[in-house]
Length: 72
Image 1 (cartoon, rainbow, N blue to C red):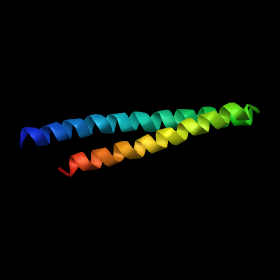
Image 2 (image 1 turned 60 degrees about the vertical axis):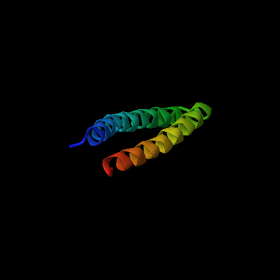
Image 3 (image 1 turned 90 degrees about the horizontal axis):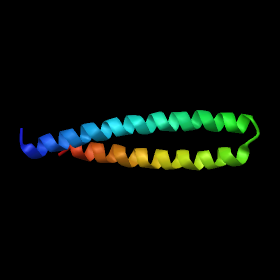
Image 4 (image 1 turned 120 degrees about the vertical axis):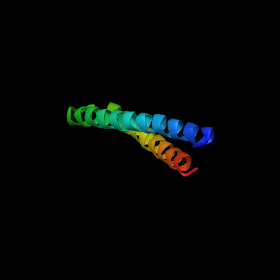
């Protein structure tokens, strides 16, 4: 296996772990957002929803990068 391929695999593996963290953070933010919303703190819940959208967008970009690395 070439050094370039090994590097791509290592980077893809690291990004995969970051992606798992991204999903865990999104799940935690979602739980907090639900609690805030259920307890009448809608403005803060709305801000948390914006943060979740950013997590989702970035998770998709990380997924795309992992796919590209694994396909080299």
